[in-house]
Length: 186
Figure (cartoon, rainbow, N blue to C red):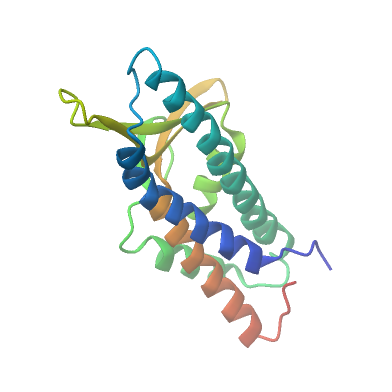
């Protein structure tokens, strides 16, 4: 048998990522964090940005790696059509993001590959009330992933919330179908 995946923990991390994105706007507004506010506010905003990025990156890498290991290690046990159907259901009404540079079809597998192989990651930030004293900057939920494949650069702007929802749907479909087929995935 393959690795133990702890999909309950992955589901929890998907939930936390979605909540983190949803809370960012309210938190930054209440605290008054604004990118580029000088002299003291800028440090507070940088502290926030430096706190949130490792959480987002770490959770996304962990989940993406588990999904990819599941796909590869269980390919001999779970029919390929199960993975294909799960991908279709997961992406049916949910745009994962936008390919800004590169030639690739955005699927669950490819989004996980891009998360794992990104050589540069930038969170997307939005500043509201820019011209007032109540300006604030929050995480938009965008995760910009950059890298190269075969010496060709690529850039994927991933919607973290949409990705979390898609991965949750994907895993639910794969795991429930495997269970119905009598296949135990740890």
